[in-house]
Image 1: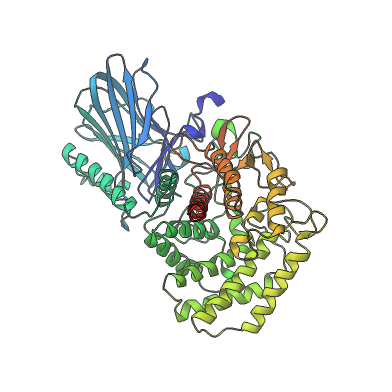
Image 2: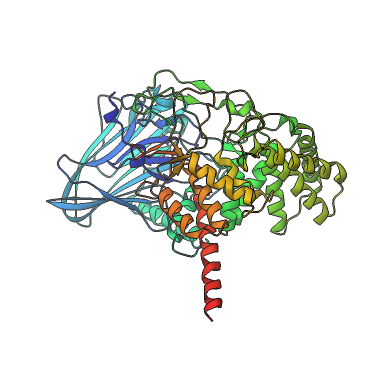
Length: 614
């Protein structure tokens, strides 16, 4: 298909129920949804193949105007307003909740409600499921009045509407209807197993019950956001990022996915297409920390317990990424038959990073335990034994090269960021041992900690330029270096760090945003600016008391969001387009970090000005 057939990544909105999500295009089509879990095969996958992927659209008939859309305040419930000469209507989209339940059943329900607000408008709807990433066309059967079942393999849907549904010729269901002022039409898609369709026990929904379920979903989201602790000018945007992180947290286990999509490309040349529908320890630990800072203790605790269940054991068996149910096997494979977004492939499932050595992961696990301790909870005996064995593995492995934070697919390197996170593992481990009065080989840990600090200060430092570098033996820069002071390795205003910040800002700049690095990473093709790195720059500048520069960098990074405040992984400043998997956890948590840093230092600056004025 032509590239023009695909909606831009930035045209999509996210709706979700903390088990799965759907991406709704500006034109009113659900083009991505994996049921019943984030990492299931797609049910609607037109995002990755316009012809074969499947979709669920509810759109006004031809000739209507451009839509206006927004979320119901403090929710992941989407409202799209349509206006035409003859009338106006609103389409409300959501995955029904309550989203945060830890149910084990696999029923997921997508509800789309069309309500007239003025005059009369005509709509058409089309439900075109294609199970298992478009590989299976469904068998559609009539199950009752305006009720149909669709099955394929071990997947099934029940579809219902109070408009008249009719089967089409292409393995789909269609409806055409009008809504006048005050009238509602509802369309429901309910994921069920084929055997549940066969026994015909599915209860046909009642319109009033669906309206109440929608209201209950809205109330649940409001109740959740009421507990957020956010103040200042950026509060609304930070709350939206917090909602995204909550929506990407799998309620059944506490795992947080890196993104709900697979294979959205990082550049037009292809090849850089990865499956992010899994839980990376690094990204998830940072996300849970950001949520905890906003008052979301339950989410932080849920991920902590997920990691304890999944990663605890022998350190040599630990992975850097897990399936959202705790799965260890995530073999990467190319999917035949899907062309990819705008024809850019390959389309992949699984992720080969699962087998990489990324030494920074150990630091995130120990830091997570330290943060949990500071909130009043000490590790129990069993987990302390795991932490000791984990930190001992750091003592042994820190001198080795690894794949680093960017999951380098070329030859492993001695990445400075990885070494620094090894230092964090030892430093926080020593602090935990002291404050919790736990036995530990403190002398060995202190010695290793100092060796790492010295190695970074010598081999990870370019004395000619007075800046830190990406890896030992290399002069290249890396935006991940902006995170060094946040680890406690050095002060934000250390002259070496200020020079490193300025060098990164100059050498990795792309129209005000930051690339991750510019060195050849062993992969073909190019990529966009990395939005999380741009927010890391904001945090660094704010902590260096360069507030006017930090505000300007924050505003520039915010321009990388779509109209709903959602961020992708990357952004192409030349084309003005979002790139990569969407929406991305790392970008949204980095947005929260940057916004909080700006707010804290702006408050301190205002307080100092008031004091001096008095």
